[in-house]
Amino acid sequence: VSTVCVLYTQGIANREWREFGRTEVIDNTLNPDFVRKFILDYFFEERQNLRFDLYDLDCKSDNLSKHDFLGQAFCTLGEIVGSLGSRLEKPLIGIPGKKCGTIIVRAEELSNCRESVMLQFCGNKLDKKDFFGKSDPFLVFYRSNEDGSYTICHKTEVVKNTLDPVWQAFKIPVRALCNGDYDRSIKVEVYDWDRDGGHDFIGEFSTSYREMSRSQSQFHIYEVNFFTHTHTLVTLLSCLVDTELSFLDYIRGNPSQPTSLHYMSPYQLNDYAMALRAVGEIIQDYDSDKMFPALGFGAKLPPDGRVSHEFALNGNPQNPYCNGIEGVMEAYYQSLKSVRLYGPTHFSPVINHVARYASAVTDGSQYFILLIISDGVITDMAQTKESIVNAASLPMSIIIVGVGPAEFDEMIELDGDEERISSQGRYAERDIVQFVPFRDYIDRRGNHILSMARLAKEVLAEIPDQFLSYMRTRGIKPGPLPPPYTPCPPPAIHPLLARRVSRI
Image (cartoon, rainbow, N blue to C red; front, side, top):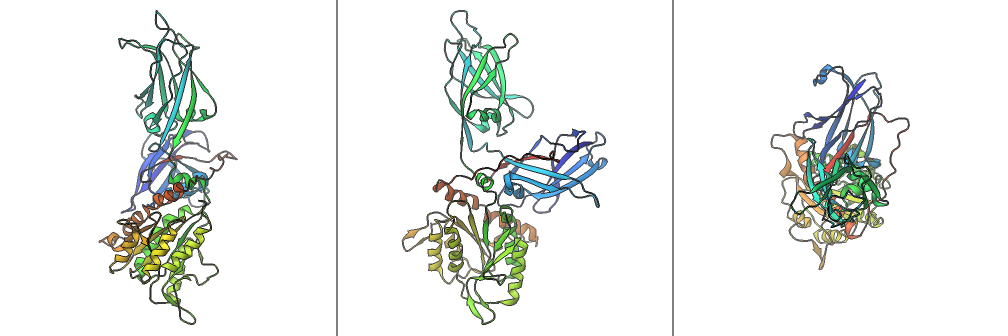
């Protein structure tokens, strides 16, 4: 068996699968552990579909049709990120009547845009190069490139007249050191400084950022290699990592974090259904139990026709939870058959409903996202503004999607992008509302999939920053990472997937 894994990504508009890359080929094992990483841009606000195909190579041809198909698996990048420890295990499918095995996909964030490291080195028994006196040593650091070449990224200062130098600690971005790839080789050369610029080469050693970062609690000693010397040593004295916490740190640290979605009673069927599915299918990847409370407002309820601004779409006020987005959609359709849509339209009751839940868990273990879909007529504007100002200090965000042809002046005011929302002289602590009119994102050619993708991308883009603003202002750190996975029995097919955050 000579196994390779092929990764495909899917375009948003035409849904066409495109080959993204292939792993290396691993021979003679039914449990290949692939080394090659796939580096993808990760967007919280988009549904990024992935496909993994496995083949047994029979010849040297790049044409996959000439090789034996072993099975495939489908998932989204959000599913991997939202899984416990960012590790997703799925059965391979694609060959009728045959069990094809299992694939394990892991995600690791390339934090090269927000992480720096403070390093300090010392030397011991360096080679004496100067005829008079001792050496004047300094270090030169190189990062390796994809083509095998090296690029200089740092020089230490020169320490004069010593064979046992202690160089000053220096801070360098991880991107400059290894381009964010923790396992990429870093070459360090040791020189004796000469005034004429003809510095004498003492030796070199190689390391990686991952290897150095393990030295935060102990020294790491490197043997400097040169064909005449074997006992020259350079020691890493300290390695201090300075990281700006990202949205994904919290997702990984709280893998069971429930995210609350509250969906409102519909008015225009098609737009409401598309908005529900567009936003909900992305958000649900980050919820552990996929149970979502769904509420409606502005309707007369059976049997007595009383007007309600806060009712369970599934008809069960004691348990308004629906199973997944499909469950929400089903409750939405059923409610249309049993309630009579009726004004006025009050936003504040459902905002206060979510705020009650959010106020009970302010330790950062849960974050609530309220999705309101409405036609734009708000009849309790003052109370709604008061509710939003109060909610701004709680772990929650509000997404408002306006549907239909109405003017959305009130909703634009609630968004707070131009001016921070206020009520009775009190300003909201932070911006927690994102409003978009659905009509601005509808594809003119009638492509509903593209319309939904455009809408989701716009309304969800601000959620990570809103989430981080709550956590950072309260000094809340991510929860502990789950323990490393130890495969037992031996691991199945296991491509390692890495991702780079582009928007958060």
